[in-house]
Length: 424
Ligand code: AMP
Ligand code: GLY
Image (cartoon, rainbow, N blue to C red; front, side):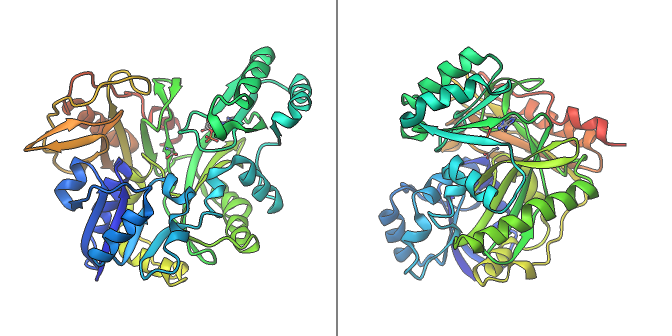
């Protein structure tokens, strides 16, 4: 029996908390800082999750066995390394391994070293700005510019106009995203359809979890600004046996082999963002954690014990995990605050109905105030529905998004619609 501290406050953490609590192996679950959803299930703790000393003191006082890390920042900042000589075990990669997400240039070099298919690229800093401009002048359009470091999902620009691309390139190197854009990766544009795979690993052995597709743009038809993610679907109907085999052989196996080859300590999840170009997979990005909202469709589909998965990961026997999954389609739709991903207000009273059947809410930007729940972020709450068909799951998730109430609520009504053409 384990005492677990889960770090994070999103829908991802509410979904992970629900799965952890389905296990007999969890004695006590703390979530820091959590949200109104995790408050109902577990013990929310006010901690600054980037202050590792504070986290360590809590762990000591409350006899925490494991820390499960939801978001990337503590990982990129080295939470795994901080606890390396402690009794407390961390589910998450080392600081060096988290560079797969923390630095796009590092991720590209890693992929190149393992011959993992990815877009062609070159990286530049202010020191070779002129060379960069020359490179852009001859680059085919559109041009993809990526800030090297973490930029809260805003560091990628896709430009169809060369002059605009050169201006944006100069602005990025001039500090538009602070330190994150002091190196800029210029990448070949890939035209295809995106999806993501998730791999649990101990750095040597691994277990592949269900795949998912997310919807990053704020507007219907994938238009407008990028967000953290407006919805997700799992499984992905175009992820057929042929594509799955290609991803396994060309991407997953060399990624895990690369962790060893590059001496990267990794007990955690690898989130591989891919694009299929005429059936050929290319890696767009690595993340060193589970995705949000992808977790809200991936974890509820896992019917085997996830605490046992963590146990095996920590023992270096991830491949012994007997993964079982629900054979249904899961769709999640996020309801967000009016104005998101730009300026929005918090503190709106919420009405969250009780849902029946195969539909549930996962909270994200919510806060319990006395006996009520108020909004506390941009992405507020998502509704995940399961059904035998994609179209039924979409309809039920939409009904859940429709029923939740708060002032200024917005959700995309087209989540999963594009995938209906792939289903019978
Ligand atoms: P990233 O932060 O690297 O996942 O990029 C954000 C989004 O930009 C991705 O989800 C893709 O939609 C898009 N993107 C990134 N790189 C490329 C590329 N080389 N070609 C086409 N689209 C891309
Ligand atoms: N949904 C994308 C992410 O978690 O990065």
